[in-house]
Image (cartoon, rainbow, N blue to C red):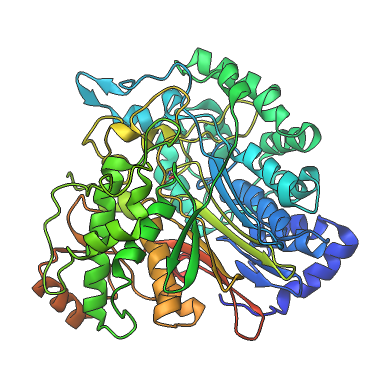
Length: 581
Ligand code: GLY
């Protein structure tokens, strides 16, 4: 999985110079085994969860594109070959550090329809999560297409049209379903079957899910992608796609309209900067909660020498800092254009105060959020464990030797989003409305609770855990990383950073090391099955209620090695799951 100058892709690269995208499509057509989800060439590196998407990015690099072009090509290809996680029907956060050191944060998060109301999912006094997760009401206006177009316009070396070509080829020629895709399909088949085009595109004629190995061709999606390649994002937001969506929504009780699409805007935000032991962490600001809470957790533990602590002591402190951070998340975080998110949440003075609450000997009780507002004016339900830890969303990390570094996290939210494919378009629509707090105290699909800051309002963006992150030291880029998996995204990123920076593990081990997760509600410490018995015992003695999960998460990371060569790693657990018994 870890790759330095992988020999296998070079033949493909050579072919790509001569045959354009034929190599990508030929691989897809022939069902050629993956050549690596993380690849490095003499031009740069790409890490995604899918070898075909990684190859799409590598192919763009090989044709003279930069890391931004490669990231967008890979993201669009993922929408085809990994469409249960992401696609043009979803949203994205794009974080870029250009070769001249400029930071760009593009917010392509979904927006609620103009006709949305605070209590639109309440039925008989209770939030109906079926409505916020499946069908016409579940979707916001997707922002990925416009965010990718903007990224290319601001920092790419290629045209948007060119970087779309690999995904068109993959949609037209098809690709073999891997085990993970087939499992997701089987889990969602009954809900997908409710919608005509979802049935037609994703299920067998008798309604059964396609098995692994089936070549999935998505002709309608190819046509939509070609429209975007030809007309740019106007095709999606003002043209044929918006029209098709409008008609379907009107006939199926949806609120989204072509006017919502026409009004959609990507927002260029100010990246969130923090210092961790002399290393600069660049995170994504709200409506992502990721940047805020990665910085909070790191800020709360940085007074401890994590590299020298015992395993249980380190996990204990981390879990407790996660608990405090998630309590803040539930109260304070929301779309900053609608609610005031205090900048004091990452003020060192506030974090010191919070850190002082941590007790190395025992768990603390966290009844509610902290209060950073006095510092400056700047402003249980326990869900089914499967739901919380199933990998949703996807992350793309790219870097090039010219010095461009990119982190994109993108999602349709839970598997196959709302389960709706808009007829004739092949586009799977997101169910991001479920990321709003549909009712205070009612957990969403990830068991997360929220408050007024994340309530539904027309045009508002739901809070996200997506945490694309860039790291630099002494002004030089060091890492790009991010993850998938709802709220565990935040804690995966934190642990990868600590494992790499404090424990100084090689990058692959930094990802594969056993993970923990704490999100305040439910008040349990989630652990992976491979956590050693003595560590568990020590954690229990400190008062932790442990809950064992299977291997979880999906982190992609690229780092600059000390030898000046890029190292790219894609989540080791995913490969094990895809190839396991
Ligand atoms: N839809 C998952 C997230 O944005 O956190």
